Image (cartoon, rainbow, N blue to C red; front, side, top):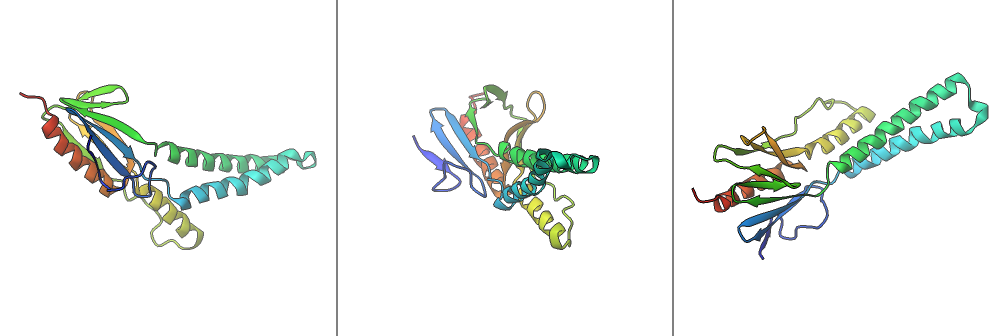
Length: 197
Protein backbone atom coordinates (compact mmCIF):
# COMPACT_ATOMS: atom_id res chain seq x y z
CA UNK A 1 0.00 0.00 0.00
CA UNK A 2 1.48 3.34 -0.94
CA UNK A 3 2.18 5.77 1.86
CA UNK A 4 2.33 9.45 1.06
CA UNK A 5 3.18 12.24 3.44
CA UNK A 6 3.96 15.93 3.71
CA UNK A 7 7.50 14.92 4.66
CA UNK A 8 9.41 12.11 2.95
CA UNK A 9 10.59 10.73 6.28
CA UNK A 10 7.42 11.37 8.28
CA UNK A 11 8.15 10.49 11.90
CA UNK A 12 6.16 8.29 14.24
CA UNK A 13 6.22 11.03 16.88
CA UNK A 14 5.17 14.69 16.74
CA UNK A 15 7.72 17.24 15.56
CA UNK A 16 8.12 20.92 16.21
CA UNK A 17 6.26 21.71 12.97
CA UNK A 18 3.81 18.81 12.85
CA UNK A 19 3.30 16.31 10.03
CA UNK A 20 0.73 13.94 8.57
CA UNK A 21 0.71 10.63 6.73
CA UNK A 22 -1.86 9.21 4.35
CA UNK A 23 -2.31 5.55 3.48
CA UNK A 24 -4.52 4.39 0.63
CA UNK A 25 -6.67 1.39 1.55
CA UNK A 26 -8.85 0.45 -1.41
CA UNK A 27 -11.44 3.20 -1.85
CA UNK A 28 -10.55 4.73 1.51
CA UNK A 29 -7.64 6.88 2.67
CA UNK A 30 -6.42 6.71 6.26
CA UNK A 31 -4.88 9.92 7.61
CA UNK A 32 -2.59 10.01 10.64
CA UNK A 33 -1.88 13.52 11.90
CA UNK A 34 1.07 14.23 14.20
CA UNK A 35 0.45 17.65 15.78
CA UNK A 36 3.32 19.99 16.50
CA UNK A 37 5.07 19.24 19.78
CA UNK A 38 4.71 21.99 22.41
CA UNK A 39 7.86 24.17 22.24
CA UNK A 40 10.65 23.26 24.63
CA UNK A 41 10.57 26.79 26.05
CA UNK A 42 6.88 26.39 26.90
CA UNK A 43 7.42 23.07 28.66
CA UNK A 44 10.46 24.37 30.53
CA UNK A 45 8.65 27.54 31.62
CA UNK A 46 5.68 25.55 32.94
CA UNK A 47 7.94 23.20 34.91
CA UNK A 48 10.00 26.11 36.23
CA UNK A 49 6.89 27.96 37.42
CA UNK A 50 5.55 24.83 39.09
CA UNK A 51 8.85 24.29 40.88
CA UNK A 52 9.48 27.90 41.89
CA UNK A 53 6.05 28.33 43.46
CA UNK A 54 5.14 24.78 44.40
CA UNK A 55 8.25 23.72 46.34
CA UNK A 56 8.31 26.71 48.74
CA UNK A 57 4.58 26.26 49.31
CA UNK A 58 5.12 22.62 50.21
CA UNK A 59 7.93 23.66 52.54
CA UNK A 60 5.53 25.94 54.41
CA UNK A 61 2.86 23.27 54.66
CA UNK A 62 5.32 20.65 55.94
CA UNK A 63 6.74 22.95 58.64
CA UNK A 64 4.32 23.30 61.60
CA UNK A 65 6.27 26.30 62.91
CA UNK A 66 5.28 28.30 59.81
CA UNK A 67 1.55 27.70 59.99
CA UNK A 68 0.60 31.31 60.63
CA UNK A 69 -2.10 33.00 58.59
CA UNK A 70 0.17 34.97 56.25
CA UNK A 71 2.42 31.99 55.48
CA UNK A 72 -0.53 29.69 54.80
CA UNK A 73 -2.11 32.30 52.54
CA UNK A 74 1.16 32.67 50.61
CA UNK A 75 1.46 28.88 50.37
CA UNK A 76 -2.07 28.64 48.98
CA UNK A 77 -1.22 31.26 46.35
CA UNK A 78 1.97 29.40 45.44
CA UNK A 79 0.12 26.11 45.07
CA UNK A 80 -2.48 27.86 42.93
CA UNK A 81 0.18 29.17 40.55
CA UNK A 82 1.90 25.77 40.47
CA UNK A 83 -1.44 24.15 39.70
CA UNK A 84 -2.12 26.56 36.84
CA UNK A 85 1.34 25.86 35.38
CA UNK A 86 0.76 22.10 35.60
CA UNK A 87 -2.69 22.49 34.04
CA UNK A 88 -1.25 24.52 31.14
CA UNK A 89 1.43 21.89 30.53
CA UNK A 90 -1.04 18.98 30.60
CA UNK A 91 -3.51 20.87 28.40
CA UNK A 92 -0.78 21.68 25.90
CA UNK A 93 0.29 18.04 25.69
CA UNK A 94 -3.25 16.65 25.57
CA UNK A 95 -4.16 18.95 22.68
CA UNK A 96 -1.20 17.64 20.66
CA UNK A 97 -2.03 13.93 20.62
CA UNK A 98 -1.89 11.90 17.41
CA UNK A 99 -5.18 12.13 15.51
CA UNK A 100 -6.54 9.68 12.95
CA UNK A 101 -9.46 9.82 10.55
CA UNK A 102 -10.53 7.91 7.45
CA UNK A 103 -11.75 9.45 4.20
CA UNK A 104 -14.49 7.28 2.73
CA UNK A 105 -16.79 7.73 -0.26
CA UNK A 106 -19.30 10.31 0.85
CA UNK A 107 -17.67 11.46 4.06
CA UNK A 108 -15.06 11.24 6.79
CA UNK A 109 -14.96 8.81 9.72
CA UNK A 110 -13.34 10.24 12.86
CA UNK A 111 -13.34 8.67 16.32
CA UNK A 112 -16.07 6.22 15.31
CA UNK A 113 -18.35 8.96 13.97
CA UNK A 114 -19.16 9.28 10.27
CA UNK A 115 -19.32 12.87 9.02
CA UNK A 116 -21.13 13.19 5.67
CA UNK A 117 -19.31 15.37 3.16
CA UNK A 118 -21.92 16.83 0.79
CA UNK A 119 -20.96 18.66 -2.37
CA UNK A 120 -21.72 21.99 -0.70
CA UNK A 121 -19.31 21.34 2.19
CA UNK A 122 -15.79 22.73 2.22
CA UNK A 123 -12.59 22.40 4.22
CA UNK A 124 -11.46 25.42 6.21
CA UNK A 125 -8.21 26.11 8.03
CA UNK A 126 -8.75 28.20 11.17
CA UNK A 127 -5.61 30.26 11.64
CA UNK A 128 -4.40 31.10 15.14
CA UNK A 129 -5.26 34.66 16.07
CA UNK A 130 -2.29 36.93 16.52
CA UNK A 131 -3.24 37.72 20.12
CA UNK A 132 -2.04 40.63 22.26
CA UNK A 133 1.35 39.13 23.09
CA UNK A 134 2.83 42.32 24.53
CA UNK A 135 4.48 43.65 21.40
CA UNK A 136 7.63 45.52 22.28
CA UNK A 137 7.74 44.17 25.83
CA UNK A 138 11.18 43.61 27.29
CA UNK A 139 12.68 41.61 30.11
CA UNK A 140 10.69 38.79 31.67
CA UNK A 141 7.46 40.05 30.09
CA UNK A 142 9.01 39.95 26.63
CA UNK A 143 10.31 36.42 27.24
CA UNK A 144 6.88 35.24 28.39
CA UNK A 145 5.28 36.89 25.35
CA UNK A 146 7.65 35.12 22.96
CA UNK A 147 7.04 31.75 24.62
CA UNK A 148 3.26 32.26 24.40
CA UNK A 149 3.55 33.27 20.73
CA UNK A 150 5.56 30.11 19.94
CA UNK A 151 2.93 27.90 21.57
CA UNK A 152 0.07 29.77 19.90
CA UNK A 153 1.63 29.60 16.42
CA UNK A 154 0.96 25.85 16.21
CA UNK A 155 -2.75 25.95 17.00
CA UNK A 156 -4.20 25.93 13.49
CA UNK A 157 -7.26 23.69 13.08
CA UNK A 158 -8.87 21.99 10.07
CA UNK A 159 -12.68 22.07 9.95
CA UNK A 160 -15.25 20.53 7.63
CA UNK A 161 -17.84 23.27 7.06
CA UNK A 162 -21.32 22.85 5.63
CA UNK A 163 -21.99 19.33 6.89
CA UNK A 164 -24.77 18.18 9.19
CA UNK A 165 -24.59 19.63 12.68
CA UNK A 166 -22.32 22.54 11.84
CA UNK A 167 -18.52 22.68 11.50
CA UNK A 168 -16.71 19.45 12.38
CA UNK A 169 -13.15 19.47 13.69
CA UNK A 170 -10.88 17.11 11.76
CA UNK A 171 -7.42 18.03 13.07
CA UNK A 172 -5.89 20.51 15.50
CA UNK A 173 -2.57 21.56 16.99
CA UNK A 174 -0.91 22.16 13.62
CA UNK A 175 1.34 24.85 12.26
CA UNK A 176 -0.19 26.76 9.37
CA UNK A 177 1.84 25.18 6.49
CA UNK A 178 0.99 21.65 7.68
CA UNK A 179 -2.71 22.50 8.07
CA UNK A 180 -2.81 23.96 4.54
CA UNK A 181 -1.00 20.92 3.10
CA UNK A 182 -3.45 18.60 4.88
CA UNK A 183 -6.40 20.55 3.49
CA UNK A 184 -5.04 20.29 -0.05
CA UNK A 185 -4.38 16.55 0.29
CA UNK A 186 -7.88 15.92 1.64
CA UNK A 187 -9.49 18.01 -1.09
CA UNK A 188 -7.59 16.08 -3.75
CA UNK A 189 -8.42 12.68 -2.24
CA UNK A 190 -12.06 13.62 -1.87
CA UNK A 191 -12.45 13.92 -5.64
CA UNK A 192 -11.33 10.33 -6.14
CA UNK A 193 -13.26 9.03 -3.10
CA UNK A 194 -16.54 10.74 -4.02
CA UNK A 195 -19.27 8.17 -4.74
CA UNK A 196 -20.77 8.13 -8.24
CA UNK A 197 -23.73 10.50 -8.70
